[in-house]
Length: 128
Image (cartoon, one colour):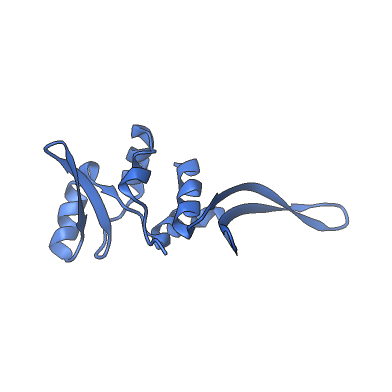
């Protein structure tokens, strides 16, 4: 099972979406990010408090390679519902609609993928 998004998936974002992702990200030990140097992308793992301080200082130049947990954190206020079936994953966003006699649930949006991280990434892209 893939644990985090790829550089190719980050390339799907517009510059504005990348900026919003950088603003949201709070670097911590254990986070991966990428940065560009001499025209090439490099990935780096934050392993200690010095790395955290550097990542915070240069946050505008680093783009996080989000993990499953980070995607869930980013989506948390939308209360995602995860569904797994044989072919893959679906992330659903639902809302309760109160009627006169009962309460119903409406599907607001969904994202799918063969891997959990892929479905989560589709949902994250939609809100960035």
